[in-house]
Image (cartoon, rainbow over all chains, first blue to last red; front, top):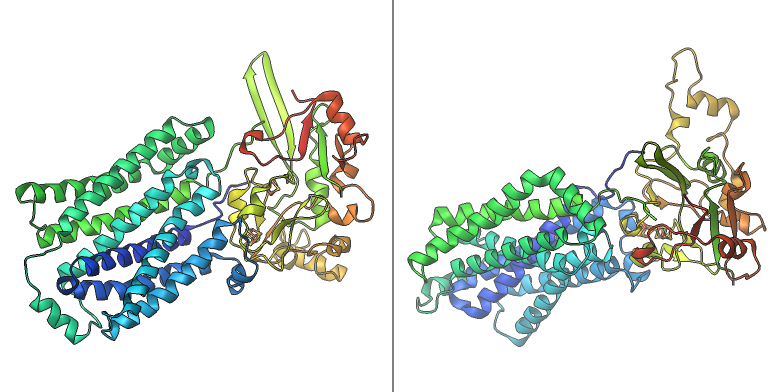
Length: 304
Length: 228
Ligand code: SF4
Ligand code: SF4
């Protein structure tokens, strides 16, 4: 019988877009907390984008279900042992909070305790959704996905993707639906407490690169099942893995941001470099999730 | 409360594949899907070559990974410790397929039994098409076994998964699973693990056994005896 992977590219799209959504949300909140005035435009844009991205991911997931109309039954037929059940809960929770949070931003109500509470809850649910993506795979026990590292890898990739998307918005100066008072706040902001995107860009790319290489190294030293899985991944996707995931998606962004920081620790990447590297990160992040999801579904040998 | 298990004697098994086929008849299983299946393996170097034919099926694991993964409790353990599936609860997420280490769950990506709705014949003007045959017989699906529908969907619709039920509809009538009944070599034995003097326990005590992938922790309840 011919082997077909049960999950197709739509699951990768769900985890990619959902990851971008939670990454954008977390970085946007970080910007808001760090320097509300200077970064207000970007953090407002981030609050709009986050639920759109996670919602878009959920649409891909729904289109992959055999019976999408029964999706809500994961709530009333809830299985506490199933990570997928918890994931449904976390995603719905995040969507509700993120939509209210975006509305508060749209209305310019960004100072009260309600806003701070929503922000805190949003961060909590964003982390839960981000962790869920890797945990879902880890819980299924397939050799390539087993172990806790896959959780950190997916979360790191989501943060990096979210960060890159915000850098692109920043460089292109896009601001849609940002209240007028926020735009003037941003324009009047002082220059003494600037958030350094390049430093964060460099830090996340370094951590993610170490994690990816460490994960691959650990796989090569694991059981026969796992070794077979990683060998099969490299056989089918080796070129894409090394070229797009490692070199284009992690190494070049790492070196590019490092080069900028070496010249001047507090400077930012040039517009061209920031846009190019961010685009590479997004492509690399998608390729990473897609390859891991597809390769992890390879047929398992039946052995005594 | 029983705890059903199956013993497969690999010395008796002749590799005829009857179980694969009769299971399809009994359970109205579509083309391309197998509830009962097998793998073969050749190892060694001539003249010391070993050939194995190993029948496979859902292991009705004690610690079933598919049950844990299912977000809607559509995959569940019944009071006989069988792993069963509720088609009305299934959302077709395929988490169970990913979680099962034995790849014994199948997904209905299209409306099943399309062969009987297909007007193309294998040899044009030579053989009847599936559609023609079904129409002549006045049945939507010739060879349909209505007994199957007593405990599970007679035919599992598009968009959900399906798998072996250990012929729970036959067990309910005091009969053995159809693969056991139809095996011409008498290689299969089904019974209750909690019955210390039952045939299953006698065979396990006499020969010892192997299970598929015992290291993954699912505690499979299909036991292979007299392996090569
Ligand atoms: S063999 Fe697979 S489908 Fe059957 S009970 Fe075990 S884990 Fe579930
Ligand atoms: S496909 Fe159906 S039975 Fe399998 S995990 Fe999803 S809901 Fe449960």
